Amino acid sequence: MTLSDRIKPISYLKAHAAEIVRTLGERGEPLVITQNGEAKVVMQDIDSYEQMQETLALLKILALGDRQIEAGQTQPAADVTARLRERLPAR
Image (tube, rainbow, N blue to C red; front, side, top):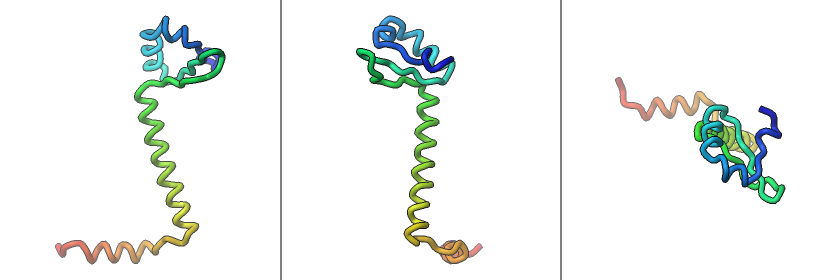
């Protein structure tokens, strides 16, 4: 499906809602809805949305880690491992 096929006016959404929902679920590609010729809304299926949210969460964690490294807020892994072992009950 080309990008131009994924851009539809709001009148198309109103007339073909059930078909759009079905197609979104099958193809997993987002649909851009325009109003007065201007892009207003992006629609996507729930699986794609959830995957995108998980990806964003991972990217936020990576960015936080990078900021902590740049700020010098790190500790050697051996020190952290030793402290964790001290907290564990003896086996």
